[in-house]
Length: 298
Image (spheres, rainbow, N blue to C red):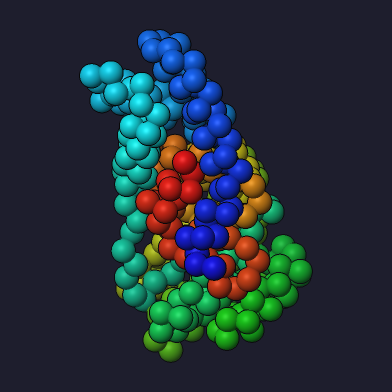
């Protein structure tokens, strides 16, 4: 099955739910404020934020003229166009090499697994990769990342449990610079976005990379669980206030996620989705495609 097919399957429940609600809305054959209010509720029920839902419906209201709003297909196509434009408001950064990519996020979002998949993706693109096991709070995290390094056939820099994460990053970027490695992928400890001391630690690691590997492009990716719902927007906002985020890695799209918050991330926070993960296999990842996502959503 193609990755697009996996996206469609992952969003099948969302698409079925949205389509059913749209059919019921048009069966009432009513126009005016009530129609648009209900259309807004359909979007919000799919985890689109209130602000983004309001903006989208206002655009539908402006463009659906001449009575065409009565046509369900016309409005659906219009919604697709507007939502795709929301995703395009946050362009995906063009990766430059050598580069360092730091992965951050809350516990359970799937950071370590995502790093393994991203490492394999880079290898498939012909890039050399080294992993930095900077989640030193849990021995299990270091071991898990080592397993993924073996699967992706890439090097890993690791210290003992309890070591200074910044020291791991220092060794990883020093090694990458000496060997001419294309990509350094940094695993970090899962943390609640409200824990100030842990967020400050991220800033410290940020400074180490900037100081020790100034020639490398430095990206910060937030790993978000697609089943989190609108709380994902809060996570992205708070992490973004601590370290400037360059992109999102969206995980667990295969777990009946609604996914509507993605439109709000791009439209309001201007943080693009870079990779999407569907499934547990090492190759169940691909660069995010806005058009495919919208087609799977509606």
